[in-house]
Image (tube, rainbow, N blue to C red; front, side):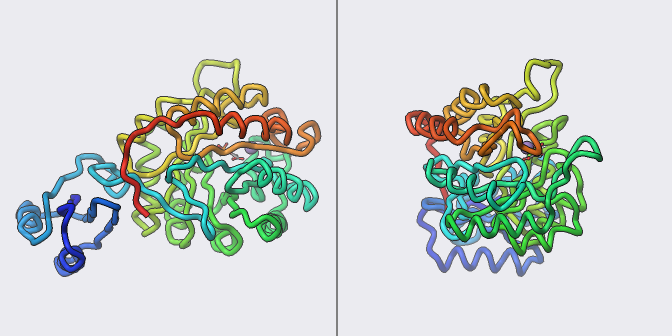
Length: 340
Ligand code: PEP
Ligand code: MN
């Protein structure tokens, strides 16, 4: 259930409601918005508890959540905004662009990408150190050395870094280096991995599985939130359909649908959705126009020599042009309240 406090509830009343939730044996999940405070309570609630919470000072009403996912359900929660690294905002008024190569290949390649990303206005840096590859003989990434190279790129540019973690045994190592952990499409329903990243103390990007429904995605996010990590950025990266003209099919519908279903912010990854560099720009613009909170875009200093996903990597020049186009695109305004 979600306890919604009055807009003018005092701090004392908020604290008292949260304490009362704890006293009743539940773990409170408060969200403090600019205009609204809500407290999520998960567990088996006897019917009387709803009435009891509703009678507390400062409480406006209590809403029950019908969905199987509770902590990530929108209910009447304000749209979530959180900070990654020192001061990169996700879910705020500005589009957050995450850019970088598919794989970290070398210090020179990563430094070049980091500088280009920063110069064009990206807010976060990506790069794969542990790569999920379809063939077991393909380049698997540089592992910890890749994480070290990414940390050096953060040092040089000040941009926070995100990279994929593929295995529960890598979570602790990755969390030591990274500002945000990425769970890839192929691992969206790796429940032991989801639980482990939920305990790492680092915000998480969760990518939609290529054959997952939106409800599957939200249930997967609930596994992370249930472990205490509620700073989750969902990512629509295209799903498998019968269409073969592009690598995947971007489900643009996911943008407004997720906006209604969850308070979590949403990233769109046009690179993996289309798989062809010439198509990345228009699809990125469509995602921004639909109201995505963030974009993840692959770039490379020399896409022809990239060790993975070269066909979809933008050159630095293309990325710069795309960023200037994105500046001119008004994002769909859902006129939401944001919380910090
Ligand atoms: C990636 O971001 O490099 C990646 C492997 O993406 P996905 O998990 O969406 O395929
Ligand atoms: Mn890739």
